[in-house]
Image 1: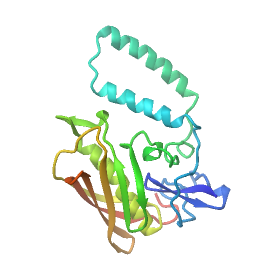
Image 2 (image 1 turned 120 degrees about the horizontal axis):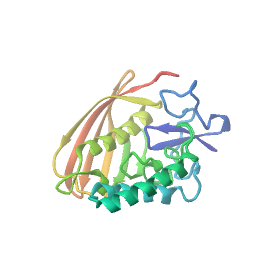
Image 3 (image 1 turned 180 degrees about the vertical axis):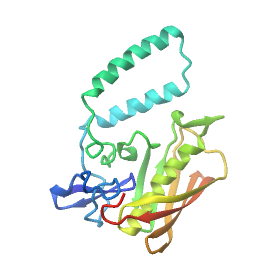
Image 4 (image 1 turned 45 degrees about the vertical axis):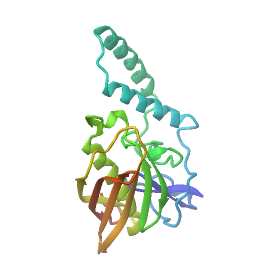
Length: 233
């Protein structure tokens, strides 16, 4: 079995055909990986990026956390700039096109190794319900030790997009997303998130989601997602 399909940014599905493992600019199904099989959600899949990719991403997240609260001296800033330039030069040789990056197929890593998403782990996913654990890091700070509302939106968009794609058995695009912030969302604490299907009207899939800190509701969301036609962007 080979990894071949991506639901939102979270769930990779499987196919028997290795030729389907990568999309192309001509066959991208709306910018997502091809989805010929919609029958399973496995925890082991494509391990591109190698065994050290997870620690690599964690170190980058750690850098982002430190920079978020950093107020460097001139000396420290210049030293950091020099090292960052060296690092950027090193990473120039590792850059691939978007169809080949590990950071959307690594199901063994939080948020599939996608550095742009708050790290989350999906515990359950089917066409009716997605359950996940998510932690907003220091880099997601909004103010007063609370997560920025925009980062909460990114998390909901990804999780609700997952359930929409599972339910619709097709890649989807976000048409609208409404979030109600009910209480402070804390940083550096594991929270629980859930998304589920409300209804479907043709290509329109309506989904709902919640974010909890224990028994306290932090935020809830409702979204409208559109299933894509083959080759549609």
